[in-house]
Length: 271
Image: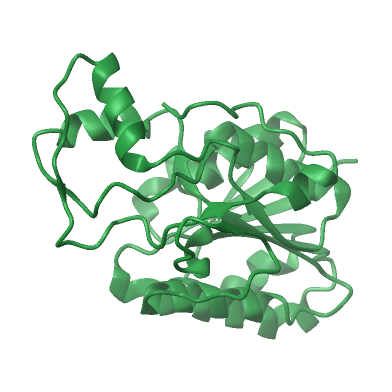
């Protein structure tokens, strides 16, 4: 079955999803606010919708499936990028009868800190900062959609893949001290598995919240040490006086999604 898919937020994840779904013969419409990106985006989508604050309805009204994979440019932009986007979409749903599913890519940062213990979709959220709280509120707005619309929320771990290898980032920064203690556990997800999960949600009409992290959970200090040893570089220093860039310490379980039949292709040590 071929469907019309709209992608709101066509960055690293959105572009990969667009390429995959176009190859599956779905009709792809992507959005951008920057006119200079239109020609580039036309290489992997059938249509490019130049988005403004006032013209999101024509875009939404012509879709069967909506992927919301937006990303804030800075911490100051979270409310406008995430929460207000969700509000606008939900408010316009009565005028978009063809839209049957919304897939939103959120973050595991909504959980907060659990001292390295397991968390799953039933865990009470405890966001550590305004940005994570904003993401948790965004989820709640999407869940207000009428029952005629399937809402699938993926809480993504740290994303890696082509052009975003963790190894490259660590090597670039290895001469600088890293914030935190390094004791926090890794919760990561490869771009390929993100796209596969998005398609799994579409094919199976998933509804609800699903964690999306593979089973690679080791202390970040040990992980980085292994990467640097492989690159024949010295160990890095950690600065415990600075907060970690990776939110609270936790192990994120994706068992709920796996019980439905999803499996990870990239499930070993991240790169």
